[in-house]
Image (tube, rainbow, N blue to C red; front, side):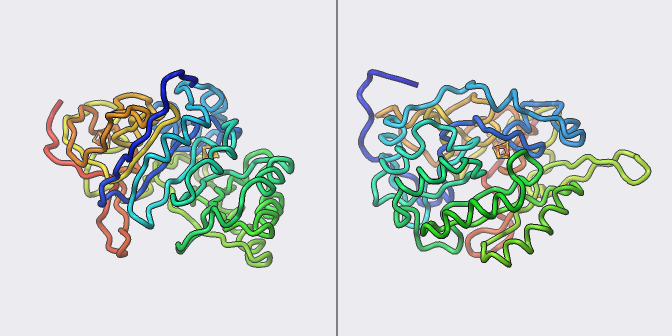
Length: 330
Ligand code: SF4
Ligand code: SF4
């Protein structure tokens, strides 16, 4: 998105109880993983496509949301003022697809902690350019996990385990803090590939971790009978995710700053991926992040990531990304 307006400045203070900040530089991606959550609410046909392995490329190639330029992203992110230990995560889609990705990494003030979520399908030239132009110290911080977190998608073209390991080692040997994460998507192909990569990672000294799959997995048993299993604990807010109709009113408050490709800020992942119901924009000089409940009329369409029960930073179970109250009939 190109604008002639003055770039915003002035601090944008993130409330102290916020636990996560992500700037989705783009929602485009070179891959089209069946379990990608970016389309889980938009696409009623998503589960069938998961189980049948039908690709989502059309969804990921479009530019529905418009994208800030590198200059705009840098100005916007440099406004974000947060407590130490809560970095700004650059993600997507695949953030490397943004033409100004390296410029953005280098343009963000050094006093801001940044992490990157990526599929690392950058190609040798992309890897070399990144390693030559970005200072590894810029992406190193005091945290129990790597700053560059590579998502492992072994069943996608060009993402074979040995090829991922080679690319990760390349950046690791150039001094970057990098690790690989895999979603425990329960398809036989994914589980086999995870098992295989555990050996490769151990042998090559790669930090490899697993992440719970959230959502509904539909598969077929050995007799070709269909089955469906819900993964994740959603008991705190019953009926919040996976409903197809009969949505309800509720009041909702988040603990995450989610910024979409056009700089707009959303209440939750459902709104972000829909590209609707933003609460403001990082480009708006008057915008303030307000820690308050907001009315919502689509309780039932919540993204599983927002309502899944997880542990907090003190390892206490019961935390969800959003807090919801006053659930009633729409
Ligand atoms: S790499 Fe990530 S963003 Fe891209 S399709 Fe796969 S899960 Fe979605
Ligand atoms: S109730 Fe669900 S859909 Fe509504 S704002 Fe909260 S998380 Fe989003």
